Length: 349
Image (tube, rainbow, N blue to C red; front, top):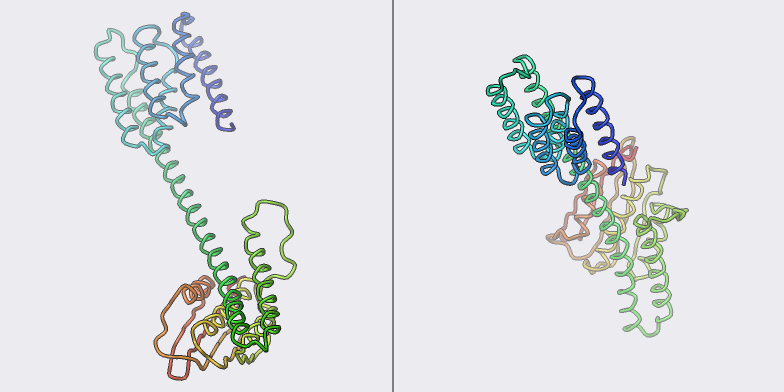
């Protein structure tokens, strides 16, 4: 609707200007000339949707007007506007070809006309104007393409971020639920403890899932009062201990930029998820260290070592760290697996 309004205003302004200049530059135009001028200007209302057809319409209008119904007036400006619209739409070849045909028609008309309407200086100036108009349209087209590509890239990055969040939230808590459900089946004397752990893990999964999906909702909702981060690390450790895994924690959380805080928490969460799902470990140690420029997260388990295959979880950890200027290494040995992450403390700022 906004574009239609702008084009309608453009048509009105061009029509008024062409009619005014036509009356000033020569005798009053005939009704037929006024009709041709009005119809040619009216085609500009469709220049965004049908640029090629509008360009052709202005060529036809000017081709009828100048040789047959009137030689005075700047009706050629409609062709120039349509030429810019075609170039701005990315049709550079069509715009260039139309400009060449237009200039050839003008030159031939001057050659065969008994009266000279356009002198040589005016012809050179017209060529310069047409080249400039095509160049401006090409710049406009390139800018649109760059903006569109940037928007697509931003949308892709946001989808990747949301997918990573969903993977980390669901994988960890569903893994805990799976472990506790297995415990309830095989250790009947501990069903109550296992079911309570299942309840807490599922509750936490739903809570984090709602917080993650909240970014997709276009409604006036209040954001979570407590952002996900290392402040919930002790709760994470307790939920993991409920699976029977011995988890020790070295180091205390400290204030960090939100992006770094979330990344550190998710990396630890994913590392613990991998331990509960794949390592067959008995114990795991989580260590947090800080210096002036970086924080380091290290998770060591005593489970199966050997070669570590990079799945979605490890890729997610790596992407999180790299997005902040850090890195993640995952190494397996005969003593277990070590996950080490380095995150710049000032990256979020």
